[in-house]
Length: 328
Image (cartoon, rainbow, N blue to C red; front, side, top):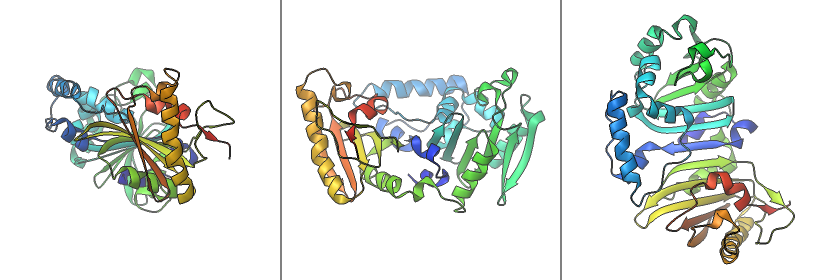
């Protein structure tokens, strides 16, 4: 998850991170990459292949950043307005809390296509300015977070102009200047990034040992005084991830702990928690469809692999309830 290195290390950014590896997802589906330069109708035909493929024994793609999702839904608008061909997106990450969301796409993007598109976009060209930070140029439209609903489009949601930079194979996008300069600093190692966080680096390293193609990371854990099922020991942050291997779909939970002893303790606790929830019947949504839980320890990270014929793919939403821990 090298894209963590392009996101500034702020409390808001660390509160939510969504990551998707589209290359790995297409490979798991056995579907070729989308056709380069395809417009909406042709692209929709290709998306139909994904829908059909997902009906097989493959985990769905979750945590896809909104900007990338919108590009896949309206490829014509993204090509016309900012020169972005969704066929070129390989990985994507977003982080933060609205409206201060950081987005980074990785792929084979063409600076000439982007420049031509933004200069000729009838909707926003009159607001276009070219700025620079630490010798990295970026495009800017209007004031921070400024909205003009008459200019609303799939690219410029709520009529917000935004900020866009292309640095190497990374496309940076946000809606405010400090956000853009922060991403540039993180990308060129002039400022701390989420990849510099010990807990996030450990989580990313652990989940990448498994064939996952999406992940959600957060520092927002949930503590409680008591629970009918065993509680986890306090941990610093966690990740939820999903993917597919030869045995079928898998849902992965990774806990970043303070030390290896706590990681080992939580490996036992998380198995017990799911077992107790399963024995209790239908009271726990987060345990529905989970047939097996295998836990292991990688350094200070507790890694749990969940399998089943009908896994709870809404785990990103119900994870806080599932991963309740004792008060520190």
